[in-house]
Image (spheres, rainbow, N blue to C red):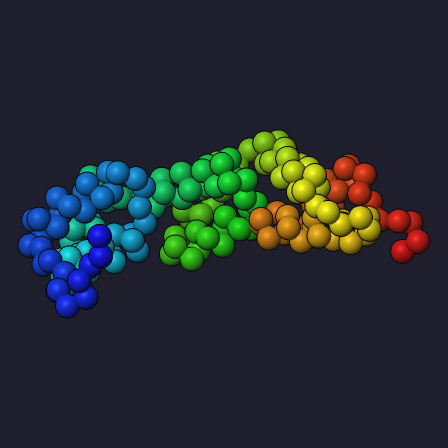
Length: 168
């Protein structure tokens, strides 16, 4: 189904928009930025959108701290992302520093390190590079891209036995 570029988007009254956006927020956790964009697409001005956002917050349909917690849980458990990547994504979504810190408390240190080891071992099985030094570097770069911290990556690689030769 294609949207007709000539057709103007449907305009909603504040009452209709509130019902639609409440359902939008009830479906899954949303950021205030997402809700603002959606309300603008409904043709509401900033004042009307602001009032609706305040009402959604009061009714606990919009809660950025809860969004941050759910985002962190999902991305470190399902996608096995590291802390740095998760924080970067939350900042891009316009989440406040306070909410990011609150969300990051969802990360369990033991489980986090276990995720790193699992991701590293999987990448090690897939890596075709034979040179141990290059192989270690490629795995390290991959883990850095996933958002893991350098000290943890080095520790995990050393445990895996992918330590660089002693001639450094």
